[in-house]
Length: 303
Image 1 (cartoon, rainbow, N blue to C red):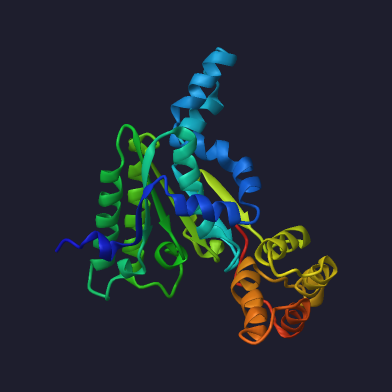
Image 2: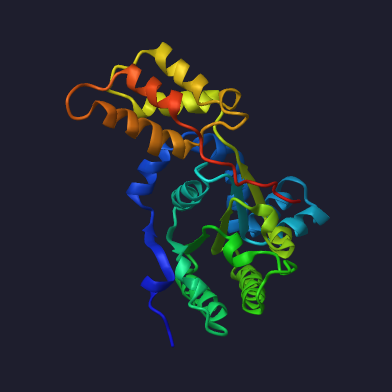
């Protein structure tokens, strides 16, 4: 039985989107990362463009040009929880339609596609989801599919604990990603995971781009703290101390994630003062001193 789009996707929005454009502005490090990988993303969306470039500047059909054209429109984003993988994927999709002056659709796969355990259900739902995504792609329209916690759908088929149903679902996911190549870049798939080594090797081999997301360094933590505490008149020396308290050297080798800072530390400091007095630097320091970073879940991105 066919499922509604609402049951297949937890996010389903037209691009460009003003909200995502605003999020990109607030996303620490987004512009720098996009500047580094943006051309590669654009090449995945327009595989013929590299060949046209080669003819213009080199007048040669070099083997690497053919290899570039054959890349899968698949991006693997790997990093710890709270390092901005999914936010980057969503904002990158919005930025890409703006740069290419095209329209698009952003669709984030729902965890409900894992189904309820019935034989063949998960594979059926994956097929349905990709069918909807492909229908959104047109000659002047792009479609982006974001699969969060991708290791839950695409874990290695060699895992001894894997149920047959899970292995069939991984086969289906690989096949549907294979099928996207015939669309000439009109569909781009993002797999976000904090367990890249658990992904099936066939998925990793197909990735046109593999991008690792680390916990923020000192510069990034300071940039986020400055941005999010605007209007609170927090002294710069206090922010520097918070940066130190949230770094790996003060936390047994594990620094705070972006999410730790933005959704835990700063809100808890604010609530320490609310509703009776203004928030001060002492509030930030008090929370930073007692709070611990989220535990690490990341493993290495395999080549």
